[in-house]
Length: 138
Image (cartoon, rainbow, N blue to C red; front, side, top):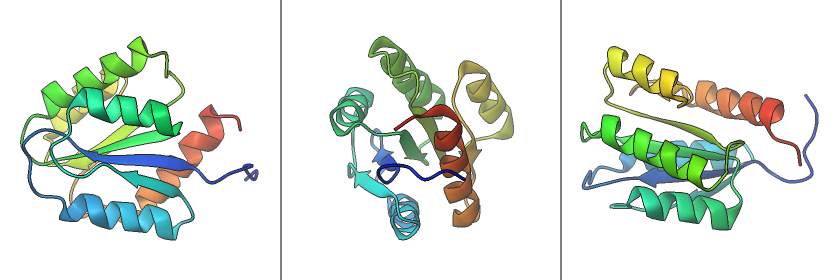
């Protein structure tokens, strides 16, 4: 695996009225422990806030934690904003309570892997690292 000139930067976000952020905090800590720079947006972000922060922070990946059931609204909206801002080399990934059929549909739209509760944090770290090594140059 090649070395980068800087750590991988990941934005971890909670979008909408979902007030549960324990999982997002665990993921943020795991990514940080793996040597990544993590920007955690906190609760109740809008898709616009998330994408604007990602653009300002020049992140390699956006990870959205969603437990509210709004994933079929949130992910497509964030994806559209990423495309609008020409951030096509930024990974959109995430996790939470998302039915398998919805995961498949979101992946067809261009969302990266989605991780259900209980996924090993090592698997998430490996996925983001491998994706960034393949799709980003810095």
